Image (cartoon, rainbow, N blue to C red; front, side, top):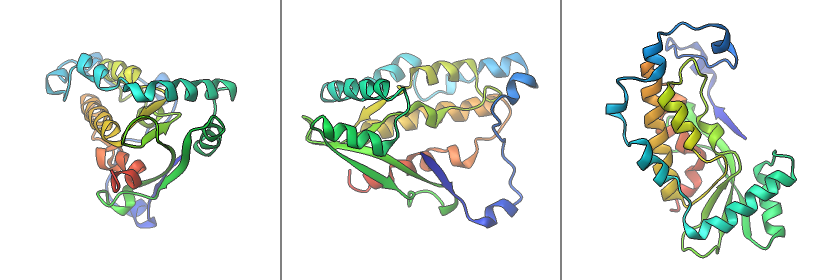
Amino acid sequence: MTRVLAPSSLYHGSLLFPVEIPGLHDRIDRHPAAARSGRGTAAHSSADLHSFAQTLRPNASAVRLLEDVRALKRAAGGALDAAALAQALRGLGYEASLACSSGSHAAPSALRLAHAFVVVRGCGTGAPLIVEPNFREHFAIGSLYATERYRQVLAAVPEELVAPYAQLSEMVRLVCAEMKFSFEAAGNSLPPWRNVNSVMSRWASMGRTA
């Protein structure tokens, strides 16, 4: 679970950003079809969809672990938090531990995102693997702001992630770039808690040791 660490002064500022309210976009459609489709934004994308999909492919050392994570989620009825997942993976013989980030030094304190995740070591690779049972949800936005292109990108983001920090960082960079274009195509600015530094602050504790 992720929470935003925001001081009270943030709520009294003059900056306005779009508020994403689940279900609102299903009742109110204010934007023209061209903006929602994302036409005109693809030329400015950081990567085409094919290259993006290739970036998201797990490496060989992560495949077996990923299969076990998915099996554990199914056994738990689809809902499994980081603490429970770490314990379950240890039961399967993995060197799994629970890690927590309180925020990134690269992001202002108001935009640091506290988050708990799983780290697995000794899995056939020199780098520890970050395990996220619900990775895609970090990039979900209301369809009022989502272009057709962004919906395709989001569909390519894995629901469960097993990856070293370097690969996770590249994935986040690509998705956040697409998210920015999607918000702009809908006539909005990207909310500051959705920029790449804020999103990456979830895994800041790994970034300082990677």
